[in-house]
Image 1 (cartoon, helix red, strand yellow):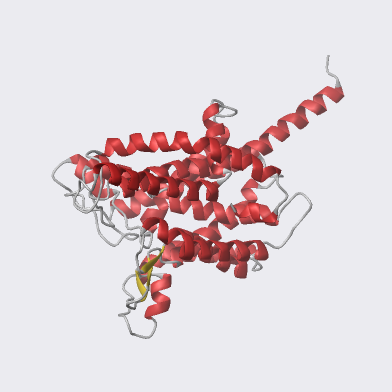
Image 2: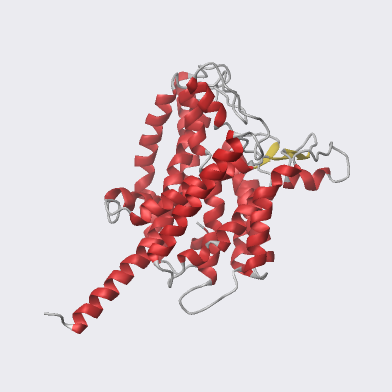
Length: 397
């Protein structure tokens, strides 16, 4: 027997579940890359004696270390893209439209303050150099988006595509220290020292320009995750964008046409050849770097939303827990890693030259598993507290 009220109620429940799945997939995606980031930061604490360049030296880098580092390439593009996407969702609540400019400006300034005042000390104790890294870059991109968000949607999309696709063409442009334009170009495109003195120096590790393109594309992708958007339509777009990015990458990289400074070459064996093919520049991120990482992100977002085995599973919930309190987890894991490292130095000393380090990359993975287990409960607890709290400051974490 078909009861209209029951049918309507079931339809409403299904629609609510679809809406929750779209938001949970974003949090789960963010949580996944947070855990991948944890692997890379553990490597930087306990395997730094096996230093990797950018791009990596495929002749000298062990394949297991290479692919561990490669996995971490997914993190920054996902963070920046989802920052733009989250800004669009903030601007389009159920009640209508609200300008995201103030939201973006306040949080952008907070992130820059955090990078300069807090985070440098977590990596480089007593260092006289302030390293302007990913949190600085995200903060600045938020400030740029705050200025540009009032532009028409087609203009934002065109700017995002132009910057993302075209910034590699600017690689030949270079400025020497002291030349006019050196400072702004160091911030925008070329990694280097912004300011140097005996007392304190500032070094830009994450040049800004490509990340502006990524955050603009993330903002322009917001309509895919609108409350009124059809789930199958969104998933179709995610599939097409993911396969499209990877397809363009195979053409550009396969033929060494454009998108990466160093061409790939046949190596002595297929493992090294494959490593060379996927050996991309991160600082600043090349087009090939962004095509690979964003393509994987689009496909993963689709899986996280669509896969029935993940919906409501423990794995999904753990990823959502990590992804819904990202700044809290970011600070927590850095403090814990620093404390664990100096505890190891106190017990065993510096067994790898100037560093304490483990002997194999597998130990890095094991330490990461332990760290993930240790940090999950406080991150989950803070996430629940944050969502229940009405305190404005708590939202920054």
